[in-house]
Length: 390
Image (cartoon, rainbow, N blue to C red; front, side, top):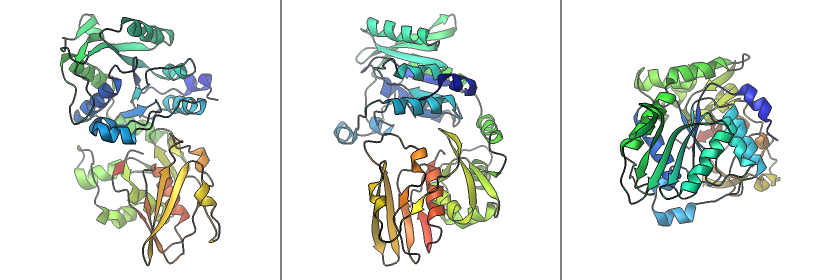
């Protein structure tokens, strides 16, 4: 079980701001709109953490309602989920905006103890719900930065403050409607965005400096965020895409024959190639910090244990005579990927004269591990070509 006393000793100076309030008050819409507004302010040094296991990321706010009903997966809280969430919050590696859900049990309230501030949202007609959530924050010593009311068909109010022009923000946010590209607006919303921008005011350079300083000393650090800024975007812009044609040039720029600790957002195809061609001892993960890529086991030709992994479903299909595609998907009953359980995970046998194309929404440390496990093959290609914060 997660040790609260230990967590308090390892708590970082990075803020973690929860968004809480009763169910159906518009929290998911507010959470989505706040993260998008902060991103537009060029604040890359924060992370949106879904602490409630409801399976709803930004995609849930950006697709049609009929598709949402098909894709939504409402998992249940359990003690393991609570422990993992508290662990990640206590060891956070950057400022966090945290979605905590609407019906916490006493056990789930331990998550609040890892947060430094709160934005509360209750319906305009729900005074009891507002009092309950304010009491929770007082009980867990979480500072209330904003105490908002939602009114789906009402009007936005002007922002007021508990202490002149400072203190907690009060007011009504209207039209918190799910779906499409609609974004929340209004003076109260703008005031909250401004407050969060101030609270999350650390520059990316400051956040990176803290995390790089915490890298293990037995490996050479490589910061791919810095590589991308200088190689593609200059020193002031944040990378949004990397040309896959530059893969070998990026590998050539990476030190060889020494253990590496790799940092920064990077595409899956680079991580897979690093696993094949370099000695990656550590990979930085935004949720868990510096991790060793797990050791994965390739089965014998006759062995099928890889088909029975408890948390990841593995599919293997031929692409052509010399290529196969390995697709990895987290099983629906597992709403988080347990890093520890990935050690010694079984992988299907692939003939050494084949090329494997790796595919799946996976953390970067797992792509590195997959590249390492299959480095004896004719070729290893990571197909997930977007940049992932890891």
